[in-house]
Image 1: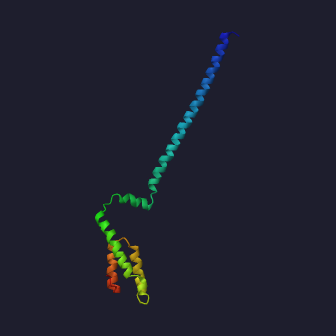
Image 2 (image 1 turned 60 degrees about the vertical axis):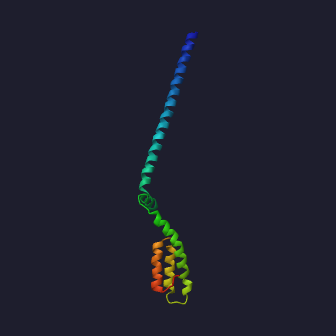
Image 3 (image 1 turned 90 degrees about the horizontal axis):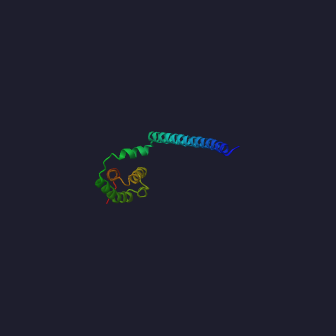
Length: 139
């Protein structure tokens, strides 16, 4: 064998090796692209189904962003409700009516008072009920 023949054989082998390497790299490139497409599909599918499955709290929060809130009324209600709640809870406590016939009704009133601890308008209504129905003197 002469030198030219050896060089041509080695160039054929290197060409085959290059072709094989390019095929392998092309395979992995297409595999990576297909994985990317599959992952993208599932991410899009997840976000579309997530919008449909909003819980009631998330839906309320989403809708509440559109509502207008009067912050002055809210702050006055919070500040005034503290004092009124203390006053009502002291004067309408069920322990003050242990031997009374209206003990169970006063218990229900007291439960409503504690439920509406931060709702000034409702506390005003409950105060009227306490004064009118149970003759409680609220100072």
